[in-house]
Image (tube, rainbow, N blue to C red; front, side, top):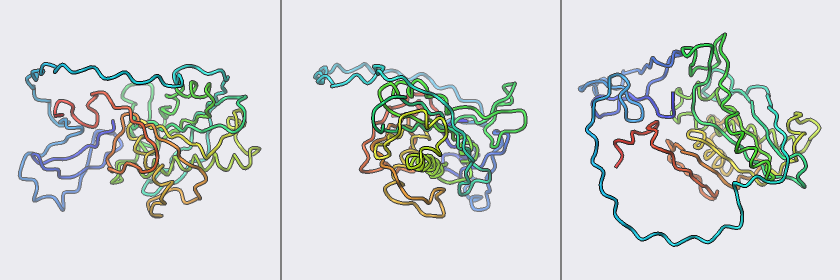
Length: 315
């Protein structure tokens, strides 16, 4: 299970994108409208790789000699040290809220998060929200119990991917940010049934969380203990951080915060009571081809893991 879509091909022609069964290894696609395309060998691919056959051996490509170039001019020194731990102590605690229903998904999606923020920072602090990528959703005692379904079967537990950003959260908290890393297993386990790969659902989930924070800012006494333990937030200064498909989700959330999406597709219909000041996209996917305008964005390019595309075919 990864960020690449599983696709059926006839030769080099895309037949369609199938839906996954609960075992994560069986994929089904109705061919009623595509039988005329099946004139070549049927293939199953993901990220440019064959899944239904052993990979063919490729001769190593001859590397071209590097072209000498003039070294770039040194950039001026920046005013800050973003990797330096700040002076503020932090508080860490998890939050669990009632699950939410999102369009096109049969099972509810969880509302879980890890909150890390400064405990004695002055004034209201900016909020940084993290959204993880598309990973396995459930695990059990053995390797065979690792699945991508939702909800998790009896005897297995949800993978706590939302706890994977603690290092970055603690660093930002020491510098005065309140941070929240949210869980999206309920989307990862069902996003094969929607055409956009779950981008709209991830946007809805992000805005569901931001709406909760907006409500707690108005009525702090009703907030969970994890929220009351950290500095109050300034919802006019929100930073969204996403990894892989989570990047496309936060990008869509920033777009949907500027222009309301169609009601039938969206899982959040409340008011926008926050302002997205920036996005940090870590190895992002962009299936929807919709980079959001008017919101500053920084992208960390991925390595050649071959998940979404085959790096050996890159030109």
